[in-house]
Length: 223
Ligand SMILES: Nc1ncnc2c1ncn2[C@@H]1O[C@H](COP(=O)(O)OP(=O)(O)O)[C@@H](O)[C@H]1O
Ligand SMILES: [Mg+2]
Image (cartoon, rainbow, N blue to C red; front, side):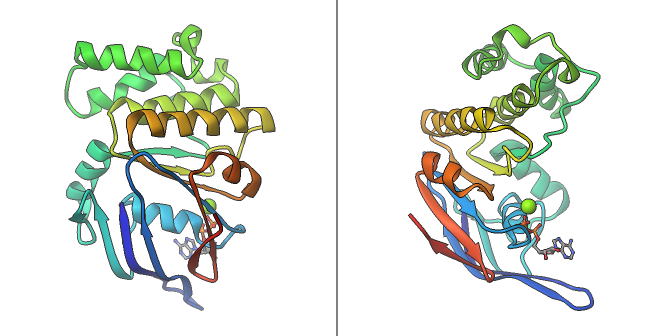
């Protein structure tokens, strides 16, 4: 994933110039942390990287392809085939079990899961410590377990890149550490590029390969 001289201006009264020339390249196998105070533009940056929103100016590349002009179905196709997302509240479907939540994206893509995909989903639940919870509904799982299920769901489709926006924002300290360590292990194992936004600098420092601060609309390296 790469951003080149990305600007984002939210129109309004007054307009807000959130990103002011952001350059970022994320490579396979690295977890990049983005820290910054609330309102600094972390979600804006991740939404642009994830093709959920477009830049006002600048370019966005996914897998070397200029994705800046992709809209609607084209952007959705890249999102579902190449990108994985984890959010602060990951919106698992309440009526379905954790297992079903992992498999539903495949059905939504209009396919039946292959043996390989079913085995991968089972393996991900095991690896993320949810092997015994497959039949539980989200309401029967803890916040930490739900976020790990959301991570598993994001990984089922073998995304090339993963975007995590405050993935531990609703978790206690122990679960935050567990989630970040699993995130890092997954990134290394799958050779994906990943970006995690968090306001928790110490947590990011401990688990991210590289750490950047977003401030004044610019990214600076802090490790
Ligand atoms: N859709 C929007 N329209 C107008 N302003 C927005 C919009 N989304 C975010 N902002 C503003 O942009 C700034 C950055 O927001 P955000 O990217 O959510 O920051 P963070 O995730 O770091 O808290 C904030 O001042 C916010 O109010
Ligand atoms: Mg945010």
